[in-house]
Image (cartoon, rainbow, N blue to C red; front, side, top):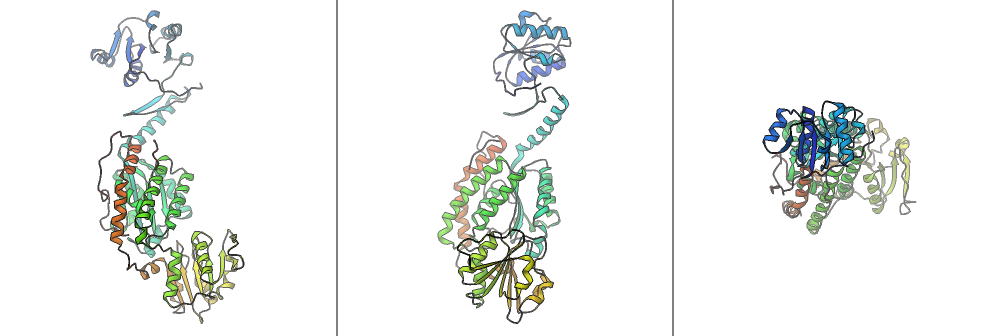
Amino acid sequence: MNVFPVGLMLSGRPCLVVGGSKIAGRKVKLLLDAAADVTVVAPEITEEIRGWVDAGKVRLQLRDFQDSDAHGFFAAFAATSFTKVNRQVLTACRAERVLCGVVDELWPEGDLITPASHRRDKLIVSVTTGGHSCRQARLVRDNIARHLEMTGAADLMIIGTSHEQLPLEQREPYHLTGRRLEEAGRLLMQIWGVHEFLLLNTCNRIEFIGVAAHRDDTEELIRRVLRFDALPSESYYLKRGVAAFEHFALLTSGLLSQTPGENHIVAQVKEAFQQATAAGWSVSLMDCWMGATLHVSKHIREAVGPRLTAYETEDLCLQYLRAQGETLAGAQALVLGTGMVGAEMIRRCVAAGMQCQWCYHVNEPVLPPSLKGKVQVISLNDLREHLRQARFVFSAMSSGGHVLHQGHAPFFDLERGVVVMDLGLPRNVAPELKTLGDNLRVLDLDDLKHWYHRELVDLNGLFDTARQTIHAHQEFYDRLVQDIRGNEARPPAASARDGDHNPHVNTQAARNSSI
């Protein structure tokens, strides 16, 4: 049968159940849950129905059904064990214009059916197959009910690690790229209590950011998928509730980056969110959290901006070279990778007056007018013949293996000296290239981080200002929790440190939507 899903508002309305069996009792209970005014007509009734009658919740006519019994009711159920009686009830209800559902083989002739339903407070989930398979409807209902029961314990959750917990060589095996990212997403989707999430993978951190049940078994399974279960507790962080809300806002504002204040993180977070949405990992709840986070992080940037000069990774590369006494104007630069970092690196090298070659693997970049005549585009297949010309090599490719390795050593001009900066994750440059002598300097992101120190910036003061900004927008977190749990009351305010699992973590390091 093709059915039209609808919720009947029966509060205070007179409803009739004809029959006194267990099946009739189930209909009575559904009507009582809807606050209907229930009358039962039957010569015999179960103890359960008798209890409702004795409690004054149900009216009782202890006799056989008569046609006149259908008069004055809004809806009725023919729930006897006799088809003849059920047909009589249906016919009488039709004459009185009363909606009627039938429990036996006559159900297709009735006006309504009761779907398999689960009720939790004000939330009701109903499943129907139009009478095709009651067992299937109950199976789906029970699975949804199990998932919904965990929403009462659900909150914001972040599990991750970064440069503050693990150096690059230890962190690299945990980065989520390619098939590993897709596999992690599929596994997380199977965990009861994980409602929505995104997976953030940047040059300095790996994070699960989601809405999940605050349960030890749920958290343990997430750690296993991320492979964090093999790490000591001080090598990763677990943040819940307000602490997770604060962390995500600080992260998106750029204050948790290796160079505090950089702007790439916003694009990286948006890209992770878009990927999660496309994969079905993220729906309305994460959309709401993202909207709130971007709003708050914008206010954080406005608050700390006057006291912070933002440096992107590409800026640090050129700052490092200048600090080492290198002459950039006229020098030959080779940039590997056409993603965001590679494209920004090219722009900065051109602005510094360098002669640039831009190496691509799959997607050949289209040069904007401002770069035409200043940048030579080459294929990765031709890399070796161009290495000898390069004074500076910046590698930012998304690759599952090393782009530069021992086999490239003979092609570098080691007499003149070469500086290679590995900006990729996983790392693009094989570690053995660091052993070829002083004339081939190889640096990765952590090397740049250790070189660069923000001596002129009071980071503690910046974080104090940022947290004050987050606290001023506490209502965004409150709304998120209300959406997740369906609470009508405002959740109690919590400290910004509540839910921070790892005391070793370095602290320097919206749209409202209905579920």
